[in-house]
Structures are given as C-alpha cells and as structure tokens.
Length: 86
Image (cartoon, rainbow, N blue to C red):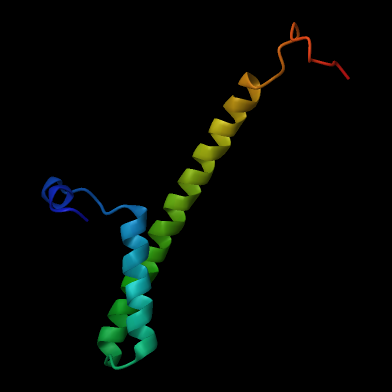
C-alpha cells in the first residue's frame, strides 16, 4: 500500500492482500512461531482469503456484465456483404 493510500485511509488492493496472504502462509509453513502468534497469523490469513474471494467474485460479475454488453454490440451488421445469415 502506498503512503498516499494509507493517508487517505484506502484499503489495500487485491495484489497487496494476496502478497500479504502469501507472506503469512510462508511464515506459518516455516514454523518457529509460538501457538498464539501462529493462531493470530492464521486468523489474519483467513480474513485476507475471504476478502480476496469477495474481490474476485466482484470482478467475475463485472466481466460477465461487460461480456454480455459486448455480445450485443458484436452482432454482425446485416448489410455487411460478408454477413451470411445461417
């Protein structure tokens, strides 16, 4: 997260959340954390995972909406000599 976005109180983007989640997973896989810090990191990771899933679901819906709109625009032009009505 950039210093500007921190100052504005903006939430980190998907890539920043994913990077943080990967760092948490790496820490947990290394071991070395005590039980309580490990549980706290795991809990933080689960929250980040939920946020990433929600973000991806929003992007999926957005792509579906854009695709649906594009399909209407991309219909062949009937006066086009290459248009063959099947």
